[in-house]
Length: 483
Image 1 (cartoon, rainbow, N blue to C red):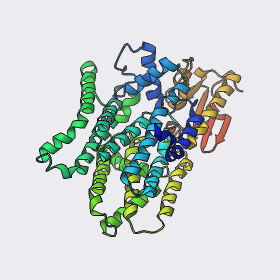
Image 2: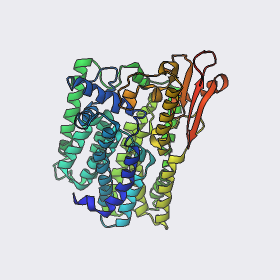
Image 3: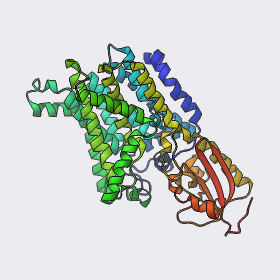
Image 4: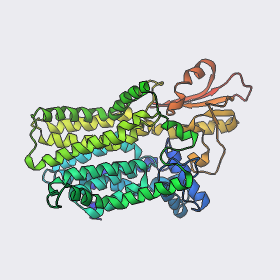
């Protein structure tokens, strides 16, 4: 536990602790409504009688994250504070492992070690996920834990990290497999030691087997009980896995490229791309004893892109910023590796600009009709206070929930969003026409229809803070009460 007193750890953990204090009572948001709401609620309400989730909230992932939160609720009470606090151990692990990554990559260059950690931990999407009750905090912590285990050849740590990834999610399992490919490349000098390539491949597989067995056992049991694995069956989630036509695949490819550089990542990506070109043109010379490391990180990046990012362009609704955190993290690491070997001057200025551009992602915004990754920017934090204000306004003026239609970000009951007791939900704007429409631009689903409300409805209450806008519209065709 000496790392808790380490000045570097204190420097990096303080911003994350500040974000924890700010967000510890924030409502569940976006996909966390499912992973931190539906899943643990099921186990909490049923007292862990069932292992598998019902199809209404089963998204195909192992339910470990939901079980973990439900256990925390049993011990500390079912509350937002308990849920956010349950993320703290993984945030600490994430910070510790990010520091460790820098130290392992640059054991004799403290400046580059510090810069690596700084660039990794200032990614806007990563920072924002740490304000949510998100399984992606766990994924990134376990990813860096496994990466560092390979770099330091700590097999016991690797077994633990891969086991945790196998318990967490389908995406974490795929990331673990790509880390296996990374290890094959990184340790390939041992091929002769193990007596040939086949024995080497099998030997390197051993630390990954426990996690693989857990994953296969879960999928086998899930299929035996439910008859399906992977894509969920409930219509609310299954539509995201619909295969799109070729023309949409081409568009999704461009969207994927945008997601990888969005919300401040463009600066780090451009530095990486520029240095990569310099390396290919042999203007950057990698020391002989470091070439395997650089090539192995290239294998890792290519594997993550080809196996976890690129396949998502075939589906309707899976191009979400948080899905690409391992890819953008490896891009950041490789940018620092190449920068360290580059003869370019003013490297400190380059790193400073990378960090500032990454942090600028919290201020990026787009026209209303363009979908925005609100779960990847701290700019969304205004949403929670505004939501409370509008709920109080509706209650004060006698507007009941069955008179108001909204989207999934707002329409769910307080029991699901606030972990309170009220089970009354609002109506769905897609299917129900009622007296009021409650709009907020953090719900991308409503952004394409809001112009109709501006043209045909009356604005009852409107508020804007930062880039977050919230409006309560009244339908004049309905006689309901008007404040």
